[in-house]
Image (tube, rainbow, N blue to C red; front, side):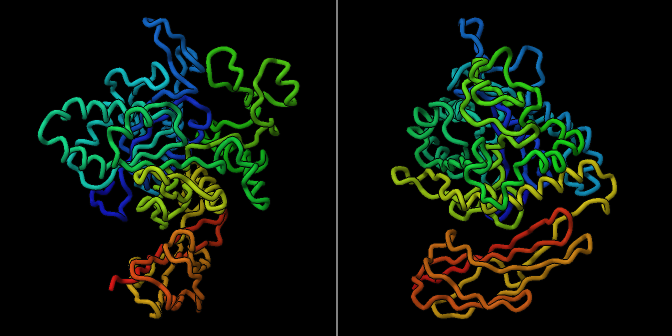
Length: 469
């Protein structure tokens, strides 16, 4: 991965994750983006939903895999190893399986909120936070915050009483960004926020990729969650697809009976499941259908699709768009389910294409992303009333036709004005609203879609700033 880092360079990231079935699904998808996302750690952790227990303390495990089970990070990397030789045909930046295995570490898993002692996983996070490599580090929390909290606590324990502590805390607070699917233990509220008040937190939970996706996805996109689409594009496509959890696949998460896990069963109604002792907290679906992939919103904002949604939480993209919390200036959370759901078609097609790469050993046998570049640059300054003209250049590595669309991402900007876009071919022009105030920013997106199968998309985000007087 490149070591040249700036706001537009994909940042490094560490994933902490518990053994929930949707964490496996998100991990499988994540590895297909390891050519574009700079992964520097894959860490097992616990949550309120899954923890290992501690026999010495007399604490039993809770919804934890059976002894000797292959845990989900290793399961996903093992599948990746079987297809790596194909993936590098399509992009030689895919890391080796050996490199990915070197990033796996066990974090704090003994209990919900466990941060009692340093672990290999918390030490890995600590080491990255203290290194001198420039740029931000995204700490993804797919389970509880506890292993991240332990790493921060370890740093505070070592340096908190030293003269350099205020400077070091400020440096780490500027370097680290925590993203999470909710708060699945108490350690953020109890330790991280009181002791690291300036550390940025993005809560990226969205129903769009979770268990209740069907309640928010638009009607025209519902087919992307069906058994037919999932079989054809995911579970029937090679070793990575075969590991992907779907309804009625006969698998389970934990050792023994788990009243919350009935996803491996098929052909039973909610009443029939309840009669067997299950707590039916979401309606059963057709065999082979999408279950959940909730944690994918954590890494989706880091995908190098041209939206650059990692730069600022309000910019929006595949991982949703976040707004600042009213009571905490350093915390942000996803807003507007439509702003997340609008991207599901792109993200699913992208997933399907990459799975196809994993089984095709010839470049020409699969579709690849179009390339789009705004020749005028991505950061522009223009005064109120000025005319802005932007031109895109496109090409496609497969020789496909590329269709360009220009549009204003109103919600991402700080101007409430709607532009009138004059589009001629691959060029757009517009007038900055005469009422625009100094400092306002307008986001204009150039979207390029190819004619391949599945259709693949790339973007360029142009941010136009009205200068201060």
